[in-house]
Image (tube, rainbow, N blue to C red; front, top):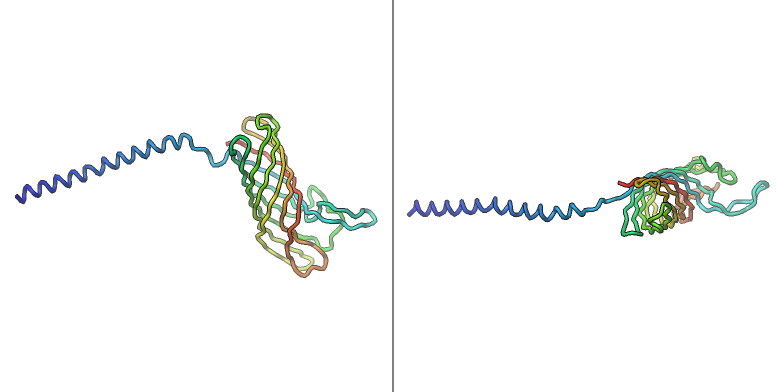
Length: 228
């Protein structure tokens, strides 16, 4: 009896252990069958990547002088820079875009701002942004678009003449419009104009600290993008 009971137990265990590989094989087969359609219809995370260059300046009233009349321009704290961006279509007319840019104060290529500053400001920034846009005339070679976005700016500012420095993480937002020119099936070039709401540091001569305020800045960009 012990022998037969043992045999039955061993046979029972054999059935159990024999069943396990079969169940694993069935599960693996089901997983493969399920993943094949998903992989067949999976879409890339991004469709286009690109590089861009541009510049922006803050809105500021100018003082009257013998050479210049008083007025308002976009010449304060001029900054130039470059960046990378990627976008993905959301249906036929809408798209989402993410970008990373670096900007720094520089006179080239716009030259000196109107007037002269007794305390010139030095500023460098890294900006990360995301935007939602809408395209028009998507089937034509020229395709205009509009977009609205938000982001964050990590900026380092100094006024060497006054010995002032500040580093801050500031929010930003923008509204823009642009146009794409399709060069080939996989290559586009274009230009855009944005109005940014972002942090501005005044470079007045008698400041005792650096505190950013919310101001408007206009930004122009030129870019090239490539389809993946």
